[in-house]
Length: 248
Ligand SMILES: NC(=O)c1ccc[n+]([C@@H]2O[C@H](COP(=O)([O-])OP(=O)(O)OC[C@H]3O[C@@H](n4cnc5c(N)ncnc54)[C@H](OP(=O)(O)O)[C@@H]3O)[C@@H](O)[C@H]2O)c1
Image 1 (cartoon, rainbow, N blue to C red):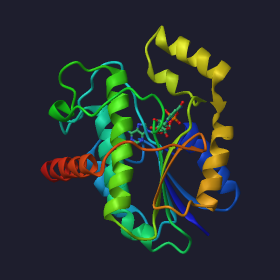
Image 2: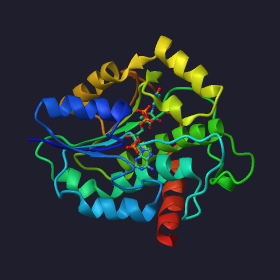
Image 3: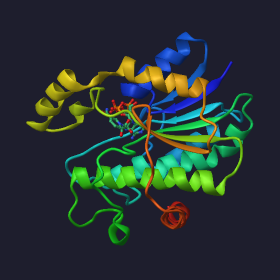
């Protein structure tokens, strides 16, 4: 029986994937905020310590959006904390458990890879203390996750396959996090144009069954995309995150 850890596996795309894998007999550990607050470095670290020593796949699907800038108790901007710091920690610290898998281990990171090209990493103000917008924070997260994938594959050669996957527009219910009128606008657009979470989960389950051969793959709803980010920037982000985690 495969063991699959899904951060953000209690609802939305991660929830649909969890249900699909459980139906097939996988042991799924689905994590939501009631299990561990992934905006917190301390809680994420404690969660990692409780997870099994052998994991076949790690799915990074937890996300949270806010139109206002929210700072966590550890002084991090919330989007950066959950979208970048927790994903870095989970993949980095669970690597030995993944390497112990019986099948080819996979890190499947649901992100904005290959999507909207806008957005950059604000190296001089990663916590976006100036000029915060939800869009800027989300796009910084997307570009950072590209770098997390590049760095993981470049610096940790082993059996683990790292897959960055942009599911594009999915009617997951995430619009409920927004205030009006955005909530209704995005909710209506998602219902009309978005894929259902069940449909979005199908190619994700297939990827876990048939991991790519390459150490790093970036896909936009199943289609390969080229990553333009460079390894030096990836190493720079790792250095920043290592230091940040040590200081919390
Ligand atoms: N939906 C889209 O159109 C779309 C497009 C491109 C990329 N993506 C990416 O795909 C991923 C999943 O998106 P989604 O639309 O399925 O999201 P969603 O429906 O909003 O679900 C988010 C998941 O994250 C968990 N979560 C939120 N805050 C948490 C916290 N502080 N600690 C632990 N868990 C927390 C939620 O658990 P609880 O509710 O139990 O706390 C839930 O399981 C996200 O990373 C998103 O960026 C989505």
